[in-house]
Amino acid sequence: MNPRILVLAFASFAVGTETYVFAGLLARLAADLQVSIAAAGQLSSAFALVFAVSAPITAVLVARMDRKRVLVAALCMLGALNLLAALMPAFGGLLAVRILCGLTATLVNPVAAAAATAMVPMEQRGRALAVVLGGMTLAFLVGIPLGTVIGDFFTWRGSFVFSGLLALMAALIIGRVLPAVPSGDQPGFGVLRVAVQGPVLRNLLLTVMAFTAMFCVIAFIGPVVTLISGLEGSSIGVMQAMVGFGSILGVAIGARFADRPNSHLAIAFCVALIGLTLVSYSVLMVDGVGLGETARRIMLALMIMIGSGSLFAMTPAIQARLIMSAPTMRNVVLALNASMIFLGQGLGALIGGVTVVASGLPMLGFAGAVIAALAVLLAITRGYQAPVLAETERSA
Image (cartoon, rainbow, N blue to C red; front, side, top):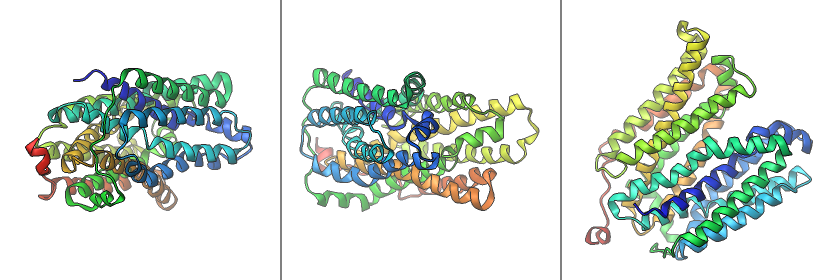
């Protein structure tokens, strides 16, 4: 595989880091800016909402532009915005900057993924997408924790400086290493109609359903970890690191089946595993099945790794199927899929919140498992088969 794809993974790593770099210091940020923790949490939700809504639109706007130029410009803008965030004296200004960050980030991850697929043969697209996605998973394991450590020494503002410099470094490396990557995508907003075409729509639905199911629990992972294992404070970070380990393992596994014709079966298996881990969360929160504290902690770590691993194993396969379904609209379908990821995170948090209010924390896993079961049914239906290649792709 083209080794230059690794620089695209670094771009994904930079965006993944800046997205949640302040999360571990949310309480300090809120206290410093004199807002509640709930209000400070809107920095993440505002980013996610703007990304979800604007990603398809920005994809159309840059459809005919060279991928390298888009990436360099967007990463430079993202770096500048993060440095600006570090200087914001009030919460309102910081929120506005985060909204702009969400808009700018739509020009990095989908474009990097589209560039990766343009640089490899068709049979290597799934693996190329997995490499780019691996940058995002590495952010959860290295970038975000490192940003928290830096912020612990230099306040939350130091975390934003770190993520800003990381984005600028990615822009510099891509500018020097990556060749020009012309776009072959169709221009015009009419291409957004591809979202309602059968193969594309089914894959987008699978993405949003899987992430919604998982984030019913992940959005409340702190109190869930405490209830199951008794861990509190910084000890929860150890369990959170399992998300990174599981994600990296999942991407490595997903790269092996992403390009296979029967990838829909692997996707269905991954979603089923997600559902089983979600049920396990609720079972452990309800009665612990008679396990001791140490056993419960081991079980919890395994569930986090298996769940996150399954989620990220299916993602490159879905991306590859989307590109196969719409080979002349790669950037658009990948942007739509990115929108579904962030939409799923938001819906999962919403459904989880309603579940906690109505039935309590232990029911979170069961709520997510119901959604996962519906996703499994979608993945095994006859309509969800290997997508038919476009005539232009087959002839090529």
